[in-house]
Length: 133
Length: 133
DNA sequence: AGTTGTACCATTACATCATACGGTACAACT
DNA sequence: AGTTGTACCGTATGATGTAATGGTACAACT
Image 1 (cartoon, protein in one colour):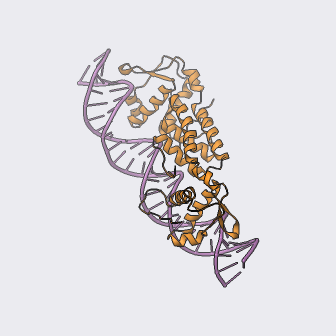
Image 2 (cartoon, rainbow over the protein chains, first blue to last red):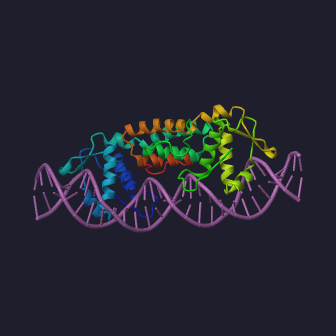
Image 3 (cartoon, rainbow over the protein chains, first blue to last red):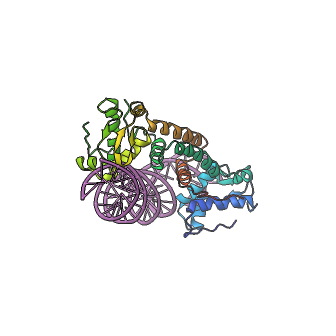
């Protein structure tokens, strides 16, 4: 498994890692059950911070592409091949697009959508015009 | 119609204007058909930039609270009373919250939601992990 | 003792955006 | 000539979020 990180690539480092590991799974460079290098080991090899690698591993486990077994290390998930082909971002994009389209059709400004989005995401409510009678 | 703008209020100036005009309509300080001060006039009276007032007017017309008739000036919309009580932001907030909840339940990170949201809003696609086979 | 993943504390650089401002110009009216 | 709303150019500031970095610490194992 050869992983190459490009600092000049606009794609975030942790994303490059996620991509390449998924690609390695898809292209059978690594198979379910195989052990992955430890976070610190990989960080050292790629000259990255361990937090960056940890972030990639965390996302990969969320997508069930890898499995961390605590002190025993990290391994490729049994269903890794299938789960590597699933593009979660595509689904997120679609979901958000539906909502945004609905709002736009009602004449809502992109600015207003953005503000409301941030409010919704951060949990706070009623930022802006609180003219409720 | 007395309008007071507070510079120290964290609420944006144009929002304060929108609020106060809607409140004036609700409290019958102004009635449908009444003429509003011109953008430049009001900006001058409140010591605001004309663009700030114009932005408020634009939003008020979008909400059908006022009606601009070009060179003839701006007037209170016939349905202003009803439309002033409608809280569009509430509806936007609810709509976005539904989508965000759905995504979160699927383990999607707030960070990922934010990135996908920006991509969806700016129209661009496939930012981040483009590992599609 | 050394390694595993993980969870905190933190800072830095960079990008994006909202808000508000200023100037200039236009057509259509009084 | 003066006014109306509107549209375009622009700049400046403050806020916010991402990405990436560093250090420290923990329990559970070999």
